[in-house]
Image (cartoon, rainbow, N blue to C red; front, side, top):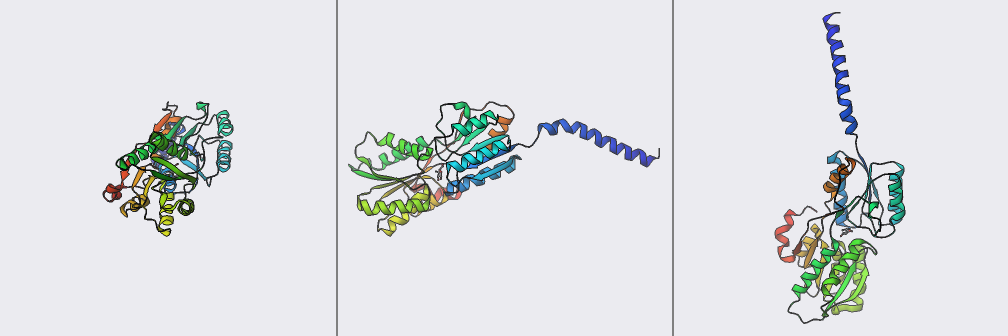
Length: 322
Ligand code: GYE
C-alpha cells in the first residue's frame, strides 16, 4: 500500500471511530421539542414574556413550537391538541383562564407528554395533570397593593371609593389580584369597591371601561385599581379626557411594572406599580430540561418580585428590562 493510500485509509478509519464514539452521546443529546401555547399579545407584559420564552429556547438549544391563542381558551386547547398529535417532548402553556382544562390535559397525560404551566395557574383537582407551575403569586400581589392603599390613606377617614379595572374574566391574575385586595380591605369599612369591570388586560379595554366609570361616578372615584399597566394607561387617557387628573385627583394602582408603567409614574400619573415579572423563559427552559432528564421538580416555582412606589420610578427605570 502506498503511503498516501495508507493515510487516506487511516483518516477514514479514525473518522469512523469518532462517529462510533460520538454516537451514544448524540443519542442522549437529542434535541428537545417544546410546544408552547401562549395566551396572546394583549399587553406589554405578554410581549416581553413571548420574547423571553423564544430567546431562552434558542439559548438552551430547544426546538420551540409556538402558538398565540389570541386570548381564547378554545384556541389554546386546539394548539395543545396539535402538540400532542406532533408528539412533542414537553408542552408548556400560560392558561388564559383557570377552569376547563381537565379533558385536554388528560389527553396529554395519556400520550405521556409532561405539561408545565407558566405564568397563570389552573384550577384542577388532579394535580398530576401538570408537572410544575412557574410564575408569580398574584394573590400576594393583590395583598401588596392593598397594603399600599392602607398605608397611603392611613390618615384619611374616608370613604375611599375604588373603581376596579379587572383583567380577563376567569383568569388567575384577575381572580387573585381582586381576592388579594379584598383580603386586606375587607375589615376596613372605609374602603369600598364602587365599580368593577373587565378591560381584558388591554389598553383599549381599560380606556373604554374608565370612560364609562368617569361618566357614572365622576369625582366620587378616589382610587383606580387596574389589574395591569396597559389598562392603567388606557384609564389615564380616559380620565384626562374627562378632566380628571390621574395620580392627583385619583390614586392609580397598577400591576406589572413595565417601562410604560414606570414612565407614567415618573409623569406622576400612576402612584404605585406592583411588580410582576414576565421574564420566565430561562426558568421554563431549565424546567423543561429537568423534566426530560427525569429529575423531580417542585410543584410550584414562585417568581421573586417587589413593589415600586412613584417616588423611586426615575431612579429605577434605567434598570428595567421590560
Ligand atoms: O399582568 C397582564 C397580562 O398573566 C401576569 O397577563 C399575566 C398578566 C399580566 O396580560 O399584563
